Image (cartoon, rainbow, N blue to C red):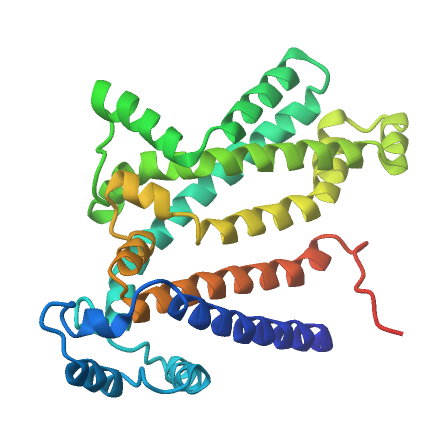
Length: 316
């Protein structure tokens, strides 16, 4: 087990190292010169002023040297200073990160509870109108983009019915839940469809196994069969997919945060890219990639614990 964890941690660090270089190089390869922005624009810009700005922010150094300096600072939790706001990038990110984490956590609860519940119901009532309705509804939910769902939810529940606010993240537990309900629901709809399909198929595969048929033949109540044999054996793929979807949400909140006026890291990323604020964009992208890699690594480690039949393939 320790060897397995060590290998996964080594793979995590290697992935983060490669991703950090791609992020750094891709951001600096984007159109626009950060030195021009730092110098105050092209109006009255002189070559001497431009050279001074490049030297001040080390923009005149080779790309590899800039990357090494940036990576060393990131390891020491120094994410640099924002070009646009002149504040520490770490302060900007830490101020907006709680909103994004709350949104993702709320959406995760919604798609896990509703998605797994719908998948279990569809598997139990397989080949009935309930199964057909759930499959049809989840197919429709999966086909609707998150920004379209956000607009529809705002129009119906925010404007016409007035049940929920359409902007801001609220204060306090009750206020936060009230403000984030529509954003979390719009973010969770597509995930709900995926989880319900995976749950339904995993339970169908588990129900077709020999030991389930033997349990039915022995007169075990159907409720106990579903709970103790079918659902337990189906937990592996369900938990794995839930973890992957949640990890993907960390990088998928941009549209929802923009639609609902939330001050999260998604909207911060969009603003930093539009303003050529490279230190902020690099920090947010690195944070998103780190969150995704960490979550997927944890899921990979937990999966064999949920399903002992899954064995790691050892190299020969």
